[in-house]
Amino acid sequence: MKEEVLKVLEQVRPSLQADGGDVELVEVTEDGVVKVRLKGACGSCPMSTMTLKMGIERAMKEKIPGVKEVVQV
Image (tube, rainbow, N blue to C red):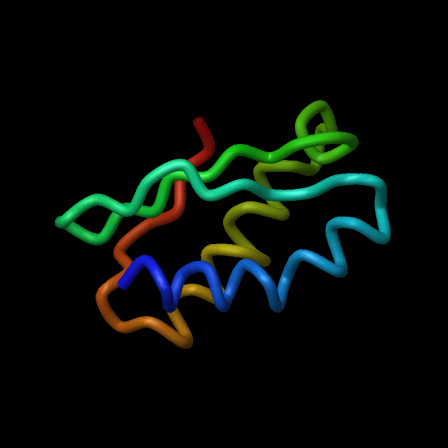
């Protein structure tokens, strides 16, 4: 599943980079939790939770059935 997660992150990364941020994969757990670290402008942005849930998590769940949740670490 990690390879699939990395592919989805590559698809959302240009949007984050356009706003001065980025995302880094930290871990994919066996129970379907994807742990990521938002970097740059995204790390301190007040909208980062919405970016994480409505952008990254939604894209992951649409493309990878095993993903249960995306959390920021």
